[in-house]
Amino acid sequence: MSLTATAKAGPRSPAGTGPGPDDGRGAALRRTWRKASPYAYIAPFFTLFLAFGLFPLLYTAFVSLYRVELQTSGEMEWRGIANYTALFTDEYFWTSLRNTFTIGVLSTVPQLAMALGLAHLLNYKLRGRTFIRTAILLPYATSVAAATLVFAQLFGKDFGLINYVIGLVGFDPVDWQTGTVASQIAVSTIVIWRWTGYNALIYLAGMQSIPHELYEAAEMDGASRWRQFLHVTLPGLRPTIVFTVIISTIGATQLFGEPLLFEGSISGGISHQYQTLGLYMYEQGWGFFHLGRAAAIAWVMFVLIVVLVGVNALIARRRARKEAGR
View (spheres, rainbow, N blue to C red):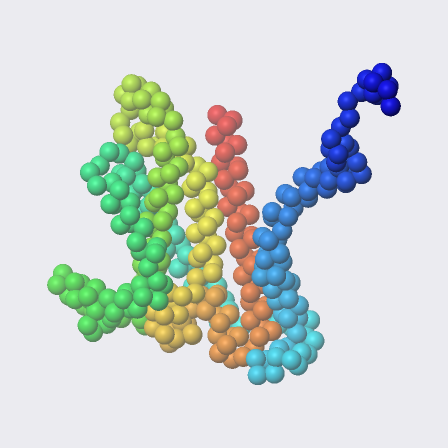
């Protein structure tokens, strides 16, 4: 080949560097991966949710329509809504529902009020704030069984520390495990002790997100700390308060460990005086071996939680609209 022809042909590309069919397939694979990678990243969560969340929920609804006994769980007899009708005619179901509501109120209202007060104090510059924040979170990290057993000893009728202190004041000892109101107060005390610090830290995080300029403006206007709390802190914490109320409502509806271990009875006391819905479900399923009825109770609890959360959200939305319209 002549030199002139070589110059006209131009420089040759190194072998294997020119575009080819493999490069086209590689680009297509990269584009496909970019589109599919987000779904691949979240696939483990949805896989676990389907296996341990959605499937048990649907299967529980299926079982609630059958007569299933624990000893012969493979034998299922169709009952339709008979498990639900039998449930609503059982006086102990309504007792456990009432107990769940009263214990929920006795534990949630003081718990959130105390948590709000603790967070307000910790929001100011105090000595040892880090130690105090760690200390108030320790009850949350404590085992439910250990905490309940300790409180059961404290609320003992004959040798409990609570009755000893009450006796020093001059009052007669209280039977904390037999009386209806007394036992519910005792169970609520355990819940308050465990969850107050946790909610206080949530409120503290919400308070620290409120702009400091609002407090400075209120102070320049002559507002006291109490008025700053009412007119600056509480409005800024409204979403956080709604969140803690909803979470506490769900927790109160599912309350199980504290009433079970307080006396060690699945019936919630001699007269079912502090038996919650969770304990009632356990008694039906693993005490009386009625798995179908226990599944029906589980679905009633699920619907109750959805209704309570919806009511809380609706009330919070209406209050927000009223505040925005002022």
